[in-house]
Image 1 (cartoon, rainbow, N blue to C red):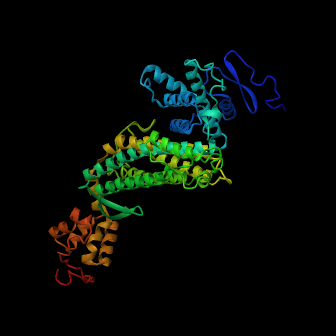
Image 2: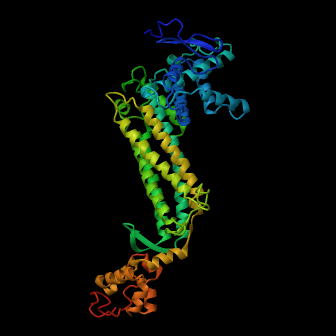
Image 3: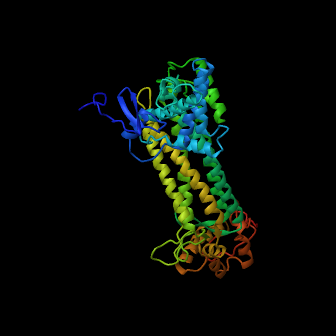
Length: 521
């Protein structure tokens, strides 16, 4: 079989292409492409998902290249004219030029970003993504210099600006990709934290609104002691808030960067001054307090920070799944389920059953959560595949974490607006189920003892009568005393309901428990 170098007509030229060469030989690249030969090979080699790289990863990779150009210029290694052109090209992609908000500036930015085309499922370590970035910046820099009368101005003329020698100066994929991956994740986490704040506040607002709604608690899916609906929703708010805190804490590890480590963490071809400068410039550009890793070899080997963030996203997804299950149960019905709350009706729920409305927003966030849990599984496996000096599964890790954070961000914000804010309580239904609950015998146990309370609960289940009715029929408490003991606030706060202020009339065969009542109250 002929190799590309041996094949005379490999990538035969056409009027719509230009010929570029790399170490494997010549290849035709679309004439209007800002990417080059190595990107073209990656596009051909990895037609896997049809997806483009995450825009957050594109932007962060460009930020890294801009910081590197600034640092190499500051050390005197990259001439003024080349550094200026590379930095200008980066700013055009980032939308930071003086013309960025003009139609022409936006059109140019869109064209440049469209040239980032390597599938997320690509070769190991992110070489293809790194070279895609190098080539786009080099070719745009070539054009910019051509406008100044320097060089041919023709894309692919790497004698002017070279993707490897100039854009990738003092760098390796093995330090630029992980740095870009971590900065991109910080961007995604920042957006997610805002969405989680919105969701937590939405649950807290409903918690306040439902604070006076008494309902039956349930454990093991069986009747349990009363609880206020507001307490449940306030708990959801705190659960989301604490998950947010865990994500924030996990993301702190992303501030440690291995930029300057080059190939294996030893920093070969990167001057110490460059390493110090590049992290400072990158911090300035991104607004994050980034720092050079304590040990560049360790930071190049380990995917620990990304693994921790992924795990924190999985933790959020698990918490959300539990909350979604609760909302599904409490809203089940409307006639044959719990029907304690009403979710906003968003769309018809059946193609065959007229009038059916499904809990679509709850189902949506549950699906997102399951997806995120799956992403974390992929990250865990990929993070473990770090043979010797490098983890080559970084493109997969970046894709899975960035995607998980993105869908959680949009999903949580959407759920807060479209579902939580519109949830209503069915107060009458909550009270109906509470009165029917056998667990209403529980607050009576300190007064009448566990055995009598249990017998009344069993009789209630067998007869269909409420605990309240049986207690009144047996004359254990007066209606006034029973109302005081079963006061909603008393039932849902710490302490003994009624504060041992009431003395029961015990039926024959039962003894009062020892305690304040037996001693005279």
